[in-house]
Amino acid sequence: MQYLYTDKKLRAEIFEILAKLTPKTITPELGRPGMALWKIFVMGSLRLNLNCDYDRLQELVNNHKTIRQMLGHGFTDDELTYHLQTLKDNVQLFTPEILDEINQVVVQAGHKLKKKELLAARCDSFVVKTHVHYPTDINLLLDALRKTITLTADYASMTGLDGWRQSGYNARQIKKVHRKAQRMKRSSSRDALKKENRQSDIVQAHRDYLELAGQLLHKSRQTLATELVDMGLMVRAKALAIQTYINHAQRQMDQIERRVIHGETIAHDEKVFSIFQPHTEWISKGKAGVPVELGLKVCIVEDTQGYLLHHQAMEKQIDDQIAIDLIAETQARYPTLRVCSFDKGFHSPANQIALAKKLDRVVLPKKGRCNKMEQERQNSEEFKASRRRHSAVESGINALEVHGLDRCLDHGINGFKRYIAMAIVARNIQKLGAELQKKIRKQEKRKRDRDKLVA
Image (cartoon, rainbow, N blue to C red):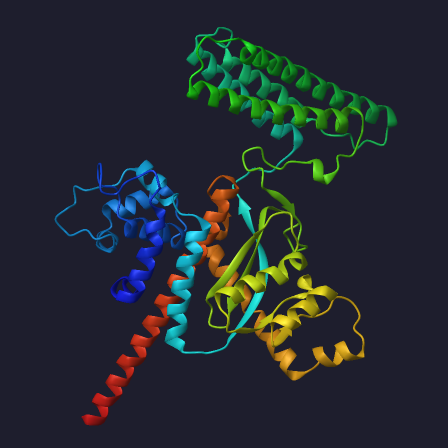
């Protein structure tokens, strides 16, 4: 961070990009002064590099002397502190596009230290988990009902409507029938009659759950249907949120009825794995000991120096669907990229042809059996050497997971993409710092060696 700030050219480029953070509705010359853009950038980078939440970030920026110096504070202005909501509001001004522009500046600064003309890269994907609990249809219905009850009670309080005085009791009752359905287990007995009785108990427990859920949803709809003389903006927003959770609850009720009562199998594409993070996907990559991960896949392109050139959040996509576009976008940012390695998941005949036109050397193994020409290509020493180096991308993925990308703490798909982009920038800044420290150590070693020779 110090290197980026003290280099006049780099600082000017970064400040020009950071200027885009200021909302168009705000005039910087008028009103109370806001937080400096550099401070926002430092705070966002710290949050991801330290893999911390906003509470810890607030503690650091208010009490850690070195960090306060990075933010531009002296030793005498201890009274100037930052509120938690201020940190959240300002850091969330970043967009993936702005962070991508900053990332290009950081990577180019790192490349100048090495002075390499041609780039070689490696591409791989991994799962970034979302902050969700394990999804079952009855759990998701409970989430939707809990929010419906709470928000409808707030709505009734705001509008002066009756009928929700016992909202807390209603929430406890729905939790009670949910737990009863949740604890019901199918019988492992060999007796057919016992199995049938147990299955009947399971169905009845779910019927009771659905019946109470239906009553609460009906009551909430009636409250929303009440005509009001004057509905302000806050009331309309609350009503819209309630309707959203009612829709979630109705979908889950339909699926529970189809699955438990009618014995249907719910198609995978009909399922939702979180009502709070609807972009969450059920991902099974076949890893040992990790049967399934709940989150979203992210694909990264890392050069051989360890800098992350580009990335993409893969919404309902698989590896071979994004390979061509990802490399094209990376080359638009770094035209000297001429070599890239992939794993088998990115292979398709069309990808092999298209990537060969864009790159001088494509290291992409084929799935399944190879013909004679493909075997010769994959058995060449150049191909084998690139394949051995490709595994180094796992080190970059592990570094990202250690510094924030083990689990995304931000909400919504926009928050997810912003969180990923900030993690990429933070990791590249850390890599740049490591290279600078390595360079300084070499200079100090040469100086010590010269002093020894003089002595």
